[in-house]
Length: 92
Image (cartoon, rainbow, N blue to C red; front, side):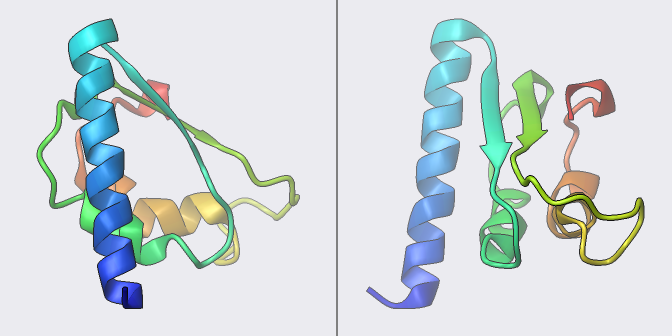
């Protein structure tokens, strides 16, 4: 499996799990990984169909980086994905 195929597979699995959780529990909770590795997966997620209003997003990185620093995981996640979908900001 190539890197691109792996990223497509992971994004599809996340959406499938999210949609199953939303159907069963009316919500989906996810903790995001740190670093640059998930950037492509995050970009793929923004193109997928799901009920974004049911998502709850948390950041799992333990580093302490100044607000708006380009190395922050939340800055990358917003640029690649979160700024492009309708997850309520109070759920991020």
